[in-house]
Image (cartoon, rainbow over all chains, first blue to last red; front, side, top):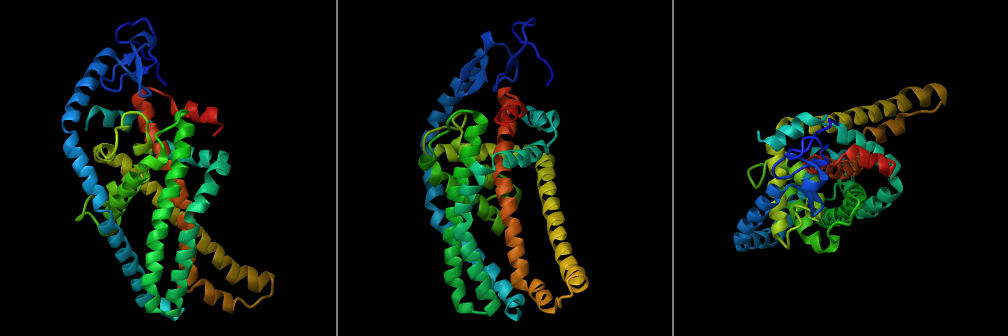
Amino acid sequence: MELKYCVNHPERPAIGECVITKKPICPECSTKYEGVNYSREGLAELKSRRALSAGAGFWSKVASLAMVAQAPVSLFLLYKYYMYIFTAILNLGGRSV
Amino acid sequence: MNRLSADIASNSPALRPLDDTVEYIRANSAQVVPLYIVGVAPMTVAIFMLLDTVSTGRYSALPEGCMLLTGATVWKWAWGSAVQARVQEALSGRPGAPLLGRLTYIITLKLVASMAMLWGSFLILPAIYGFFLSGMAAPILLDGGRFALEGGRSALEGARWATRWVGDSMSRALKIISAISMLFLVVYLGVTLLQLLVTHTIMPSFLGMDPTELSLTIWGWSWQMAILYMLFLIFDLYWMVASVLLYHDIQSRRAGVDLGQRLTSLGG
């Protein structure tokens, strides 16, 4: 893996890159949050993104519930798919075995 | 193509996680295979019941068999998620979100992805999205990091992200699908040639046996379907683990972690 240097401290090797800004960062410039590395700017960006998505939370929840609610329909379609496949195999010559 | 996709497309060979998967399964089969067997046992029973129904031409038994197969598919998804959770925990080195709490969303996401694969793009998503989304549903929703958002939102956030990756890096996604399809074809051809060798050379020439009856069985529908199903099981387990490795391969680049090093430390 190519050695990269911290964007704020060019003399220090980077330990990774900020998942938001994609800039290489050293241990001092890095904050580990939820298991991944963020730079100071990255954390600020994450905070504003979270604030934005919190505003859209209601519709996300509605969409998630709708997704779970359609599960019986998808299950029925899965069943119909299996029926279609095995009926086709039966008609194509499975009976002749 | 955005920067993330460009990184993904250029930084490492697309097929490296597929190679790593073989090594991972070889080194950790004791942790992965038993769970997988529990997951596919009901499906195997259902498939063999259906093959018996097909070979005896009993139309009336098809609905019950297909209903059983539908239930067994959901069961397989649940246990498959447990397999993926175990692989994910080993790869990330930290416990992920509790599986039971996310199982409903994982199964729903897999169901949606399967619909995309089985019924085509007119319903929800193009088939290629369905293939990746189905494999990565559990890793995405169990990840304790970026996508660990509460409740149902995580399903949608995760889905959006995964489909964006496939769309933004289509050539990489196609490479992966082509490699797996080619491997399947080669293995299937190998098995077919082995059967030919047994019935046309080994049995009559070396063992002095009459292969007529065995040939009839081998080239019948039921046998061929059973062989295809057995190969499907091998490739299904492979893709189950590969999709977790693929997900972590992308994540490790985002987080600046060397996945190869992590695998080496696991003894994979």
